[in-house]
Length: 336
Image (cartoon, rainbow, N blue to C red):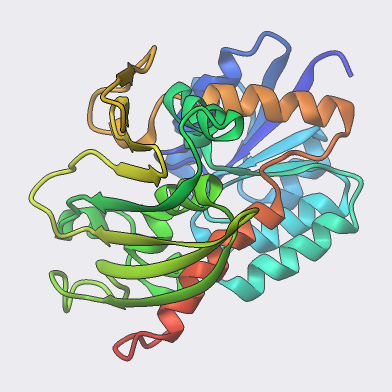
């Protein structure tokens, strides 16, 4: 295929990032946008110059895209992605893969049965500092991991949840801080330390009681499978901070301590300190989205052209859903 025909489904906040990213790719163009909200649909249509549609079925029939970017509320991911895959239309799904583990597993089966390519947006894996840390671990330059920790300490208030009625509800969001904010960091932690084999955790609503149904705070201890045996990690997440503090991942090895937040800092036991600063940083109200959507989307589009499975697939999306689901199951105050 010469030029990749792209459709964007769901025209809320994150869709603008996808639209801008596609605009930066020379051999891709937006041929259709879709949203049930007429105002958002029209704004996206004006922004892209592409026709707008009120339903995915209408869009698929009319413009026959090669790939659909799903930027809808979580509870719509599985049904819409399955519809695309049934037509062998490739799909890039914003995180999470689905709003429940059961829906994620259903989507994974649909992806196996389709000739199309499925990808999940864990764009932080494309950050240059994130990839540098993965490289250091792969080459053994920082020793063998013995454990780690990560935390997300952000602020979300009543206005944030009032702005989009799907947020903060089990039926539409599928969860709170774990599902909607900290899932990226949880993905990084298990990417660095290995698949999670055991989860002990708790989630609760501490600061937004009466405002949201879902959790705003969570803590867990994880066990990871590595080639050298099992190791542990600790994970904390909250939406109850007074500000959006930098997300932090720390990896402890037998010869170094590695901290990834804005920069990547490696402190070797022999006293050496190495600092890697990101080549580009994101600023402004949505800086927590990072700057790596374009890199991920470019890579995904290349896999679509080759009809080659994408490395951030349904299996990767299910890893985080299984961890989060296990925490919810262990939390006595959670009523899904």
